[in-house]
Length: 337
Image 1 (tube, one colour):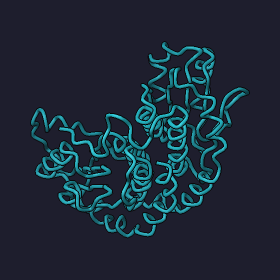
Image 2 (cartoon, rainbow, N blue to C red):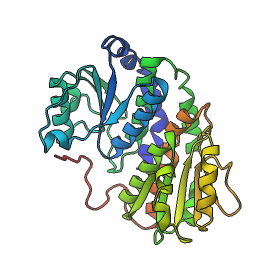
Image 3 (cartoon, rainbow, N blue to C red):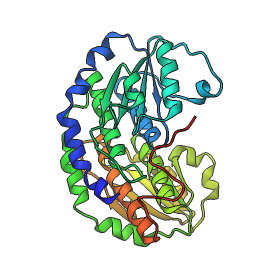
């Protein structure tokens, strides 16, 4: 897991150097009168799907939904997908329910784009266009470099469609900078206790990383962690907040912080331990800050900040004397139906 996190800058470089595979999509995206987009994914890839959803909605203004594969695999729904784009995101490209859903969507008139780490996978082969993550073989069960590649791949895909996110090369240098300083991770891990509840919160472009951070900690440290939108948290789950709760806030540099202030006041009223991932601009004395990427905007910073949440999960598992590479009960490829 450690070595694969360390590969992220080189994976970013490979993806950017092969941006032509995304540019080749421009005509497909612009000439098929796409009116809506659905994203098909599971697990870590589903968190990247949320990131793509925010990108398309904010940069293109198109409606984006997240698929329910069981509507096809269990309930055998008949789909009607003309003028619909389905983007299938999967590290392995092998999950049975994703392949079955994509096959049904294609038969129903949808255009299919797959984003995988295996161009020979079933999902890659059935797509109208396959995008390679260029991450190379990933051995650790917990996805790290492939998730970061998915985030950047989503950015490159939307840029091929809109040309609004073209200055993305800064993510490479920003990722190298984050990897060069582990001190803040060490401090945060020392301040965190596996015995107490952890809640991970985000909003907008930081929400996918909040979900992913919760998943990574669950996978590697074998505890239940919630990853929620701050807005959803305030609508009910905050009632379970106590002084022993550890609240992780995903706040990438460039994020509009005014949206957090009112909710933060209510959270602090319960005196939990607060950890900031990204900017510490709203942090107060006694709160822990893990500085994130200093990119030109929140979107790019969110891509690179995958590194700090993964590094935290890795070191937290080590602190708890667990094996982050091969968590009990998990396998690298999950074949759901």
